[in-house]
Image 1 (cartoon, rainbow, N blue to C red):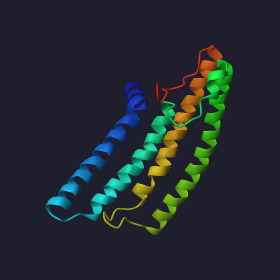
Image 2: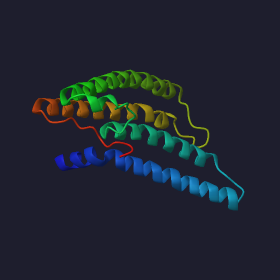
Image 3: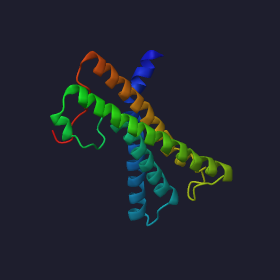
Length: 171
């Protein structure tokens, strides 16, 4: 079981992103062909593309947190020492954690309201809860990755190692 968890921990977001990206591209391709060849398009195709994109965005957010690839201003980081850099990263993770917990709480409220009233999507006629869950799922993954990042930074700080900074965007 430990190897399965390690594989999911290492590549879980990648697999999910690949799944939703392939679904988005394949559906869009099919819909373009249908529109151009048969002069007909479906409502469900547009919905699948839209909801796949939403899941892509939220799962991608968690992947970015894991790899420290999210948007940040790191000019200051070039001028501070290892310990200050670690403290700044930890502070940033704590702030992001608080924001994520608040957003997770409020996003669940939307899901619960949708479940209570039984709202369905217009084209697919599927419960809208499945698609509204993208936000809580995304924030749950972000929180999990922030906790991992926080623990990694604490270990690095205690061991005197430089903190993990992720890959730079334009290097």
